[in-house]
Length: 468
Image (cartoon, rainbow, N blue to C red; front, side, top):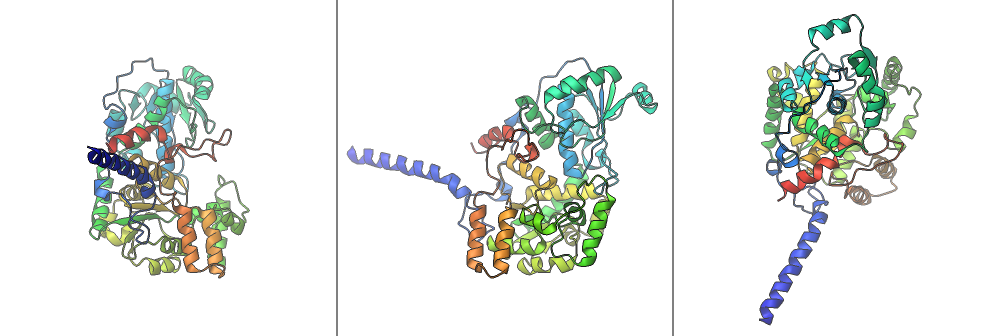
């Protein structure tokens, strides 16, 4: 009897130790980083797929309310900036009991393409999936359309990072007076925090369920993923070293004099880019510049990336072309892009359609075994949040401020390769997209964690249900 009691106690103790050590093992890093300790991530095709029923009921009770007016919105920015804005606009339409007109997408900024909402998103699914909560129409009723044509509506950009009380007190009276209100800017118009739980979960439902890409975009991205998976697992690298980002940020490391002049000229040509005179070196040291292709190559090598792993560049044209990609290609021979994986007939329908190309990259990044953005822009943030929702898939969140300091020390011979590699790994043990509470900074919403990169109100239930 004593022997059996001793065995039972020993078994319980061992099980307890394993349970306690599992989170530590999960933070060690993915197997694609072959010199790191092995970890327990499942293959990508076995990731837990979280259905809407695990987070919220698929059949939400139909809301009956008096319609207070009609909301027209003109989104601004790139695809993922507009995606987050659309989620916010649906949430606001529900809060204010107004009818939302299918959003108009940006066609005037640098990122703009000719695509309309229905060219990128499945518009019928968008409307029907939300029909019990928000009334959405493809266009205004004829009577109201005539009123808009003669200028009988109210137009404004709402105040950024506003809470619900602002919309109830300042915006709702405008609907009651004018019937039609047009938001001409929609990015970051709703606060990250301090909102009712049901509104936060609605933002998630729109983002993860209702904003489904068109079948054609899904089919094309699926084809890319299948090609990449033929050789095993792959990493999606969001190499945000594109002309628009460098011009906007003023980051010109590695650029020649002509390129610096071109980037500066572009920055002055766009009046809504407020900052004009920028100290590139100082901004880099502050960690505010995207990693260059050369810096990215060093970091991936330091992290111990498997030399044979395919890397898919989920981004547009790299500024400086092949000259800037040489070091990355030397470090990672299996470097591919859309253009190298697809034939001309596949590319035809998205060519010169920047938002549709971004949508393809979004889906490939979502399905990758590892997602590694070199800059924390809108795509990086929204994909990071979506991957958290799908079971905390691995996302390497580069600490650029730490990395550029280490890279400079290594390039100047202050540290050896082994020391550099060790420091880089230590800095990223806990930066793999795992579960964490969203950071709240009162009165500084731009500096706190973005809701769409870490919508933790929607994640705990999703993750718990996926691992049962």
